[in-house]
Amino acid sequence: MQLKQLTLAVLTATSLLVACSDEPKKSDKGTKTEQTAIKAADLPQKAEDRYRANLALAAETYQKMYAQNPLRGVQKYEITASDYQRGDNSATAKSTLTLEFAPHLFGGNNIGAVTLDSHDTITYNQELLAKGIVAHVENHIDTEHMDSLKALLKDQLHTSDANIERLANILKNLKSQTDLYANGDAVATAEVAPFQVQEGDDSLDFKGLKEEVRYNSKTLPEGILDFSVAVEPFTFTVTDKKDGGSATIAISPLKGAYSIKEDGTVKLKVEPIKTEATAKNGLTIFELDGIEGVGSGAKYDPAIMTYLGDFEANVNNIRVTHNGEQYHVGDINSKSNTQKTASGNYDSGAEVTFKIDGATVKKIEPSIPVEPQSLRVKIKISELSAQSQLDLLQGVNAFQQSLIIAAKTSDVGYVDKDKATAEATANLEKSQADYEKIMQEKFSAALQEAIKNKTRLNYELEGVTDSGKATFSADVGIRADSATPPEAWQKAIADVQNNPMALQDLLKNNLDLHAEARINKSLTDKLGVSQFIESQGAMFITVEGEDYVAKLENDNGTLKLNGKPLPF
Image (cartoon, rainbow, N blue to C red):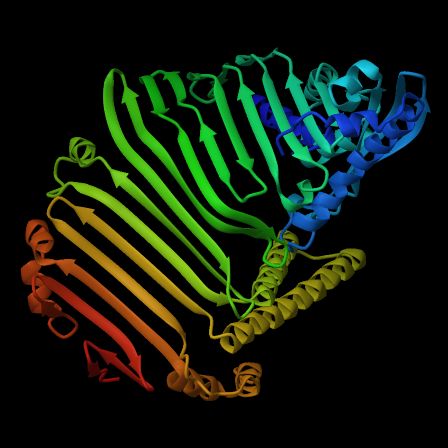
């Protein structure tokens, strides 16, 4: 495994281990009533109960928030306890994290369960209880027994034995602990100690990482948590084996925090980011002033597998400096909104605006006659049912599985096969056909649901320059007054291969379509294309004020361009 693979493995393992020591609401100390309600004689049992319940919480949260998603990469996430040995003020136990990955993550291969054991120490006493803490849990990874994880790294990620041992040493020094409070709150932290790796001319100097998650056992399955991470500066050097050139990348400290409160408030903050890359062509510095986000009305809805509510985030002052010359790139603003409608379906939209520094664009490409100022993309879907989304995701999953199998059969090719290989190939091809059938059925079901619920899709694209703007918008869906019964759509969709005209007629008479392209004449003049548009596009373009416009719509079964029926 190359150095970058080792780095990825370390960070991935760290994230898994934080999850193992649990996940996160902001903790307050247990109230006096809660503390005094626990008698000294009862504390060992209470500590064990909280420890076991906290481990079980991981599976409960996974089941509620992720398990129903057909595209999930993890098919099982569970932490269990065994060999619990209780003492007067402390106990020991073994906890086991069990993960089962979706085959599509590893080329369709079912790799079986991956387990990671931890030796846990559970401390409980009156001093901790006075702080509201029922149990303080420390986790120590059992690096001597990581057979399934090592097999995954070696067989699927092609990790060398030397790098597996390096990873084991890093995990051995990982500090992971959780404070379990009397009121159900918990604070889990994980720290990766500094380490260095040298592999030939490649190297990694990692200064450490700390993650903290705060939550409450009652609200974590609802997605309520506080999360923060601090990554100390790290540097890595990579050498190109072909030309012998090398590059050194230095990452400044990274700090970020994210929280979702019970009242639906969301906050995101990532502090300024700076990366320096030194190579044979000089020094390149990438910087941004940080990322900030706020939201309201956040509530996880398992039916649609996402959060309801409003959210807005800003990426501020993106810039690149190369050998002392600075280029201001711009800012990014994103907005999203998802709400449940009165009909029980969902309206969901997202908008991204890239605020461009036009002077920088002109500096990079002086021949451009205008200065771009912004690019905005907006997508909204209305009256989407949870069932329609589920059918769509299941169809995508089946398509994904079909592609994986197709890749396997194409590897065999048309070479002569022995009997066993021929039978295996035939089984794969049958399985591929089964997935393709499922894909067609699920996509058809998703379409039928969308038609039944009169789901609508709206799209907007806008580009703004110093000389004017250009826009494109489209709105499509089944007409609100459509009286065609679902059975008619179902029959037409099912028989589309034999009788495509039936579905075409239904769409013609029921589809509500409005699309418009518009560009300011001042912009086309600056671009030097006004004469071309007027001479070559007269059939498709009209003039409204100072704009060139093209409109396409379906008017009661007649497609019209700029208000006139299309000639075809």
